[in-house]
Image (cartoon, rainbow over all chains, first blue to last red):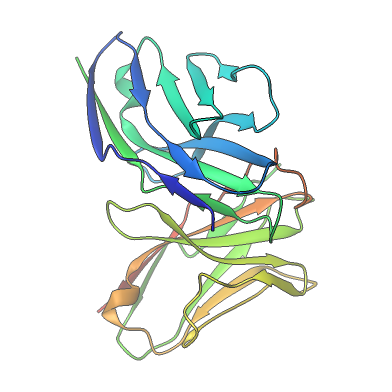
Length: 115
Length: 116
């Protein structure tokens, strides 16, 4: 069964510094997609970045990049130049192509950016 | 172009009552997913529906919970005889095709259910 693990319940980072949020996954499917979402205190879910299992390069979207290590089954999110507005919950998610194509989410990491 | 619409935003029910949560997917989307989130926890998958079909309900409790996505109208998550443990935020998300693994989910703002 597919599984997403986020081992950091909470993280602190100084403003303007970079931070890495960990995500490991477990799947036997060769084809899958990995996603990161941000949930600020207002509650909405905001899509940040996507990585496909066959993508050769790590995904980047502005200040967000994904450190994808397929052999280790990890898909860590890197936020560069942290801003106060980055303080939020961050969720890693996976979608398998086998089975029913559902998306499963990790338990999240709460990031606090310090001024 | 309206996003995923969920209503109500807040729903208060007494134990034993029924709760109905509605979700209208983004225009052009035919796949709907429901998730439950408890405070300080992640999103727990409940059910995945396509128009008039339940694709995967493996995350939904067998009793008291049901979901539908009719040909016309919003998707409905129904909780009968609510108990205090049902208090949570319920999120709906939609996607267009359902068969591409690079499709991102578009989320609604959630319904906060409080059971007194």
